[in-house]
Length: 531
Image 1 (spheres, one colour):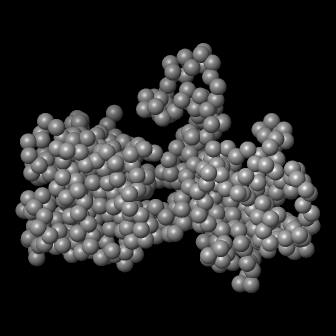
Image 2 (cartoon, rainbow, N blue to C red):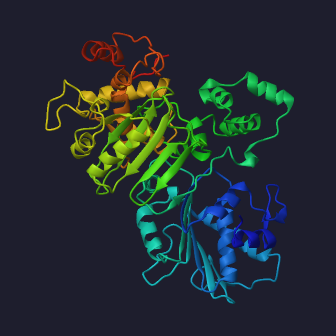
Image 3 (cartoon, rainbow, N blue to C red):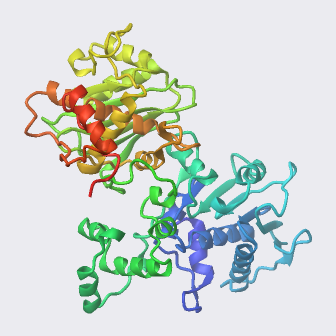
């Protein structure tokens, strides 16, 4: 349902269309969706030119016109954008389809408008050009293209302190720009460490980017689908229409066929929005975004649960990986669950506040929900969680143990991550995600994108990023063969990565030979994609 601000905008505001004509401001699908879902603390990663900034400027103008003592502030990333935003607000006021609203130039800045009848002000400035002190109050703050600000942490800290917690509005909006401060703010929301709400607007759901196509153009596009630019995959999976493929080609040509740049400015997923130029280990995985079945079924301040609503299925078998945390807010305790028959990710549970024994009990609860799933716990830092599972009465045969590991207080239960075992399980996970397993979690995809081999040789996330979900998924890969063994006669049903030939003189070949000798045939990943 459209808000009162949306109604006023549509009934009284004008806007120039793409041809430069003055037309009534009718909210487009992106603007309508945003209008209906604002919370007061909102982050908007998006594709270019979908109208989010125009909507926010119009909304703030409505507040200045109708609500007393509004203090609206919009901060852009450069002077040119600031000038453009300021002209847009002047345009709204000068073309208002109703009684004219008097405004005067603010004395403090030429980019400040004063509304005498309501005592409100609207300031539009460039990041860093004005200091907001402790005595300032901002009722409505819009940080535009914040991913391109210099010193965003310091600047935003000062701005946000001027916004009342209970009644103020803060909107952070930007296209992506790698794994910077803005990326971390979005990740905080996804990881449950921030009260903000993420509104992601991709380009394929924006009607203006679906162009008209003649029969001749359609035939040409379909006969020239280019795998290098993922066109065949996007078409075969039904992710894009012919008109969208035409738009995509036009934009790629404008960007000299720089696919990474196109994805950054016109992302289909959050992962594409926040691409990094570094080479990650998981560059080729099976990921499906925007699945209608992947839904958040639990969301509290202490935990969240995303689940594929089609599962659990009768007579299907599941494997659960737990990477525990200390529960003090520094990192996440993660549970990932996959179906052995379909290879689909079916659940993801997250906490950074609950203690380890609670995490263990949650693993038991989810394990029982998913047909007594086979549970694999990362033992190095998760002994309390593992003990909680073993003490619960959960079938011991369905908890991973390794007789080759050093026996401890908990016997040989749990997976021990070492400098030797970690590359093996990460390699196994790469094979599963490349060949057969499918993930739906945007957060897991994002962590996979930032997981890399560092110069020191360590396999872990980039600086400032997390890899807890990756390690929970790796636990599923580590216990896969044992799960298949203990789940019964499944060798004809389970999803197994396709075997590919490996050059015995490469690192992959050496690891493959080591794998055959020491792990009795556990699959190991190719560290270089085989053609």
